Image (cartoon, rainbow, N blue to C red; front, top):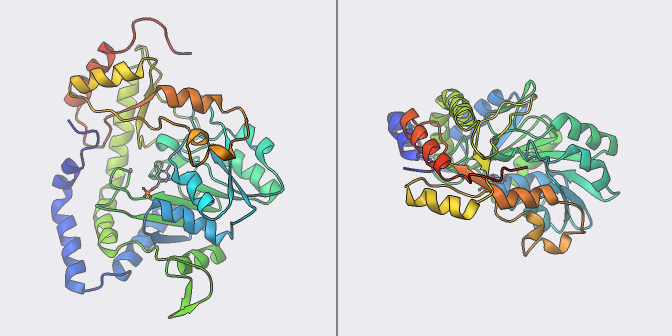
Length: 369
Ligand SMILES: *Cc1c(COP(=O)(O)O)cnc(C)c1O
């Protein structure tokens, strides 16, 4: 059994993928070109964003977004303390200071109620994450950010394909950043990512930054890097995008089925916030006996993963930026989160088997609070 079965997906779209790759090989256009342009057009339509800029990976998407906003030394960037390292480390790479705030105990996303207290005169950006596949409360976060004239970067690496109210994840704030790492909801066969915005100037800045800050050939108007989306990956994504709606639907159904089957079990299942749809980038439950639980599942052939075992403020490279604020929800979650196999091709029999093994290995007493 696979944690994420990419092979099953490949089997079902093989001809289309091979055809797309063949077209790139035949064209001889291996850097940017029509495939990247087509994908950007289709993704901006998919998210209803004015602009989509294909970039090398999700980490580079965040870096390029921060660079377009001129973030650097002396600036503060607010991040949730429970997320993947890249949400905070790209600000650090630019010399800015990450400021941590706790996550909400129900949504596991940035707690908008704690945001105002974390803002200072140095705050330049806020990066809410759609952790596990549903957006943070973006309107609440945007309202506070607007009041203080601060940019909001949505880290949509796990939530791409989900919706916040009437908007697509990636198009809920100043800039949206996503990743096409193979295991993400929309994944390619290597590294890939994209930035989204409705702002003309930021779009132009991000487009330039991804090619060494070039405005004209060999003329460098601003500091940039090599951050382009690979053309082969763009072609693969064109094929994957054709089945993405169907896959999102399957994800929603499989996630809901897990929740239904586990409703009386001694674990906490994900809750979809009323303003969201959920793509279950991860199907993550909370258990009180995580180490034994993971080991027992492994013995019985059910792979799991932990997203994430250490909250950001406890990471060696980030700990010095921790200023003793209360991050207890993130700390508690880091101790009890565990993700179950989740992908759009998970069949009912396999899911039933996973649920049976999960139930068998949950603690009999001591429910979670
Ligand atoms: C995967 C991920 C990233 C980084 O994306 P890469 O494409 O792996 O660089 C950033 N933020 C979050 C929340 C992620 O899950």
